[in-house]
Length: 370
Image (cartoon, rainbow, N blue to C red; front, top):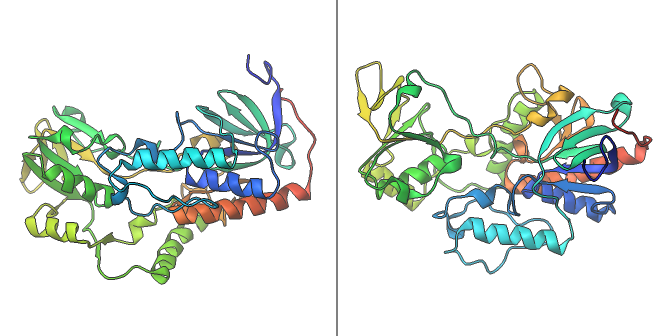
């Protein structure tokens, strides 16, 4: 039994799934348009506390090291201690933001599926959750990627006698003291982890599928728009989105320059197989290791939308602005080009405006789960 009864669904205008940067932005802008929390809009988050994916960041990532954190709409983050862990600083900021604007986030709540309601495309969507079923006129999906770490598969992976972990569970450099560590991945997280681990590990090896691209010089508004446009084009074509960071290259700062000069960021091509004691290449080269750290990125956490069959043959959901092309009731924020923090804020505002127009155009009757 849940608060809605054994089989009833609670009618609501909008369900926002996820309370990270994008979800809170959407909730904030919906409130500004007059949609009240828990009466017109419900915000669901499966995390145990405020902070989005930031709350799971490793302790050594202090706020002063954070790149790309942008204030939520309507409230700046000011006076933060740069030496404190980013998980604490941003978690507290998100919690204060939710309280200030009375967004009333429901947590922890798992969303298991979003399905078509009895009326079909002209009616409501049924959002099935661990606290019951919502019959929503629109859904804002803001689930991000943190819950879907990508683990590549290589021959012999199951034979490795050491430890394998993904950057999503990176505990900080101290856990690798005195060990031989292979870091796989050429993104920002991979390089940051590698530089930290190299200071305490017995040995480190950096392996990437592609030659890393380092970016020199300023990265301004023009460059940023060009990078976002590349990601946006993939989404328009219904392809799985790449992150904005993946098309910008790695910024060359003093720490990166020093790591390249010292050989820490001396990259090897991707190995061909994993052995019980390390990794091997077909040319006969081998590297022994105690740990393989997969800094191989994430995929969009959208499995709960599968019953709506929104995926295109290319594997992604085709999106125009924030709206799923195949279903105007579904909006994706923090997806593809809006995955950056600035992009998430803009997407939240855009989705709220689009949803207001949608809700004004038709008012379906309440439904019950059958």
